[in-house]
Length: 190
Image 1 (tube, helix red, strand yellow):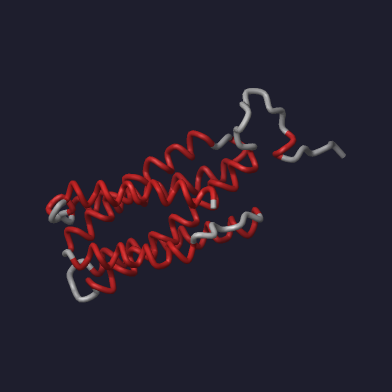
Image 2 (cartoon, rainbow, N blue to C red; image 1 turned 30 degrees about the horizontal axis):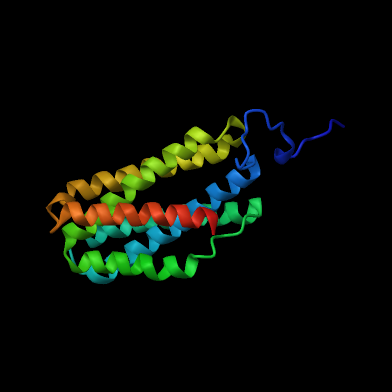
């Protein structure tokens, strides 16, 4: 029987001191994507808590259901690939809901501005992951690509639903983007 090499046993040609091994890189991707989908579910739960009796509820519920499927898939990947989740999940549990509810209290447009900002960051984040992953991770790339398409759909829906009409749109979206980028950086590492 041929000797099967572990992913960590691949030659290090092209790697620099301090670069992550392929296994470490994969762990970060799965960890951070699970954290992001968990946070997204909590954002939509917060928005729905405030906007459940509005015309936006059906749209928000649809997006939340897609995020729940994404989260479930990354939970499976955490288990199957033996990757620990981020230690920051309790923080994202509270912060995600607070962000969703807080923006929804400012009105439907602010909730949509929040969604637009988060999904813009996630679109770029997933694109970078797709560029990073090799062909040996074709299934994971396919999953991320499908989820990225759905995140882009959420961003576009938010734009159609009046995100740019939110009070303080530029300030709000800049703050949400900065927070999302910080959450990505932290969750991939902690």
